[in-house]
Image (cartoon, rainbow, N blue to C red):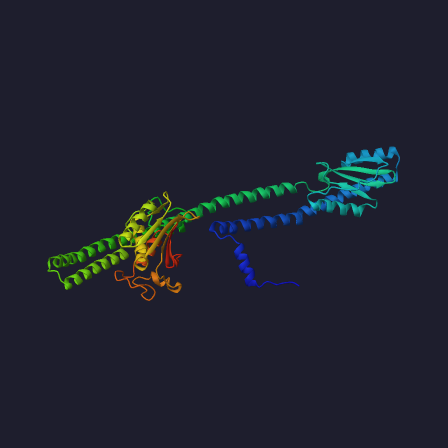
Length: 448
């Protein structure tokens, strides 16, 4: 029973087999038509020219062999055979010898080009009635033909070019060399074009992770250079926007902190009372909220990237949580480093650790090197955790998930949002999961 695959399935199957890279697809587009053209030209050459010429040469040689055999059968005397052999040698370049008492060989070697043997066999079968045997591979310049006669075997050696066209292999050689040469040129050309696209992609990825690739310059095809110039213009606009936003935030921060400082000074000079205590707490909360807002809006975008030892950074963050009353255990290899913005990463980890300290009592911070070469920092707590359905909602700015977690009177719902923003700024991600301690696990994954 034959199974017919639907066209849609065949299309998906073919698409999965095709190259996925631009280099591979471009090479396929150029090389495949060239290869098909070479195959078509070779097929037409063999079918319309080489096979026709070989058939005619084989027919001519078979007629000469039949003439020699008929001449020997007419007169088998040694004198007549000597005259026949001399005439064949002089006029037809055929070497004829009589091997008395011999039999035809039982096995025969076949030529690499099957049409050679097939054409000669057909021609000899049409011209000879006696059994025959031939070999086109034993001698480089001759074809060995043997015909069975009553006295033994009549052996005829004919020049190879009398049996078939000998220039076919040269044509194949030239076609193969031309195909390989064109393929090599195509590979070099396509590789040069795709390298420009790869460099543009690498520069865009580096800029997305906060790394300024100053050595990038547009090159390649006109369209690729146009895209590179557009990228550089976009990069310049974004950097200018970040600088303007940083300057604006610095001004806002100064303007807001000035009245807060005056209020704190007035409260410090006021007589102690329950009302002044409440007002001091309100001012502290307001100052904390302003710091959170500014940190979220600023995004630590102006800090440079550098190789940073993770263990001292994590221990510093852990000490801050210990001073807040939490039990923190830090585990990280001594030589583990990551290419990050240190202050931004410290703030992201601190947000996760302090968030865990608010909702749990025991915190574990573990850093390790991933098999891919990246780094993973996991923060576990033994708090109430978050339902899996609300993991994505936890990253939304100003969302505190009061139903799933204890009310954080200090927070404004920006801790996880800032952590994710920092991780994505490094080309990584923050993931949430159930902690082995029973609470929430927050994992920062950074690329190599």
